[in-house]
Length: 462
Ligand code: C2O
Ligand code: CU
Ligand code: CU
Image (cartoon, rainbow, N blue to C red; front, top):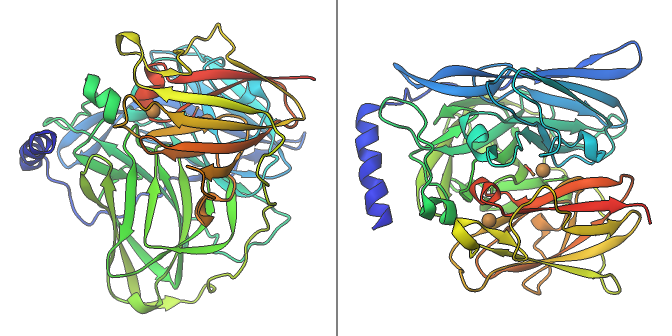
């Protein structure tokens, strides 16, 4: 029933909105900041309203950072002090959260660091984590989903100047951000963001997939190796990504950095908030076409982008054998275990973790600085029909097990967000190092988060 219905709506919309096929992939500008005389690298973001033509002739009202939709890619260097000024030119409050970053609680940009309409906020911290692809987005209680949907999001690249990894790293040449976001358009071109109860529960389906804010864009590749930084920046649909033409992904990084070495994958599954960096070896595809396809957990299919390798390709390296060495996480034995049960069974349409719906005045969990713990996250068995995406602020964790089994190699590195299919239980290893303060954990299906599936943990001095 559902798929027939959304199928009809899709045809109806498609008849009125025609994408211009063949538009080039938009590469968000790379913002490397400006080094101040005090040695602090400074960045500036301004959240504002705008419009963009996703479909020719139809102006879509949007929100963006330093532009009409999405925001610049911020490049941060490990070891540097940074200062990011965020100006809020919106008519409502917002926050700007650095998803995946290890930083002091007051710089996290979560629901506590509210930026009033017309106000500004400065995040100051020292970059202290391995090279990785992170991202930023609003995080205000109750309006996160809506603000992200309208376009507020951007990528962050953390680079470690002390290590030279043998992978393509020329932004916009052989190293590309790929922000994937499922969206629903109205016939007039505006976004339709009106999730009903079933959408909140199971995921808000769309009728288009935006890739860096474009529909089925084309990426002209001219190197033998192509690095894509894939982000599921959508609200609440899990994406299963594949390549046609029988070509594989070589996954090289997960949320928090490089894997030990490339892992050959036929499909990459990303829940909202998750990232995967992949390499494509285009040598046998000269002059041909490779399509990146996406299927959502609700069954909708899209072409995310079309990669067109040139007839002659410049050699820019080969698949590395090893990338990083990642310490064995052990089995977590001897550590205290904290349960987290994600449930869609809350009262009045509210969703819960451990039977509680989000309350900013309540601290749900208290942990001690300098300790490690196992967090055992599971989904409510009464309502086993929706996936969840569990995310923790302030750190990168390790997955110890998924339903009792060791994680596959692509999930064995550093992670900050983990997909749970209905009925799943995952055991995570968390280490509370460096910073005290209040951080969030929540479901990254943004409709779930806004419906209360979030809690706060406090790291305290022991
Ligand atoms: Cu991507 Cu709590 O956030
Ligand atoms: Cu986050
Ligand atoms: Cu959820």
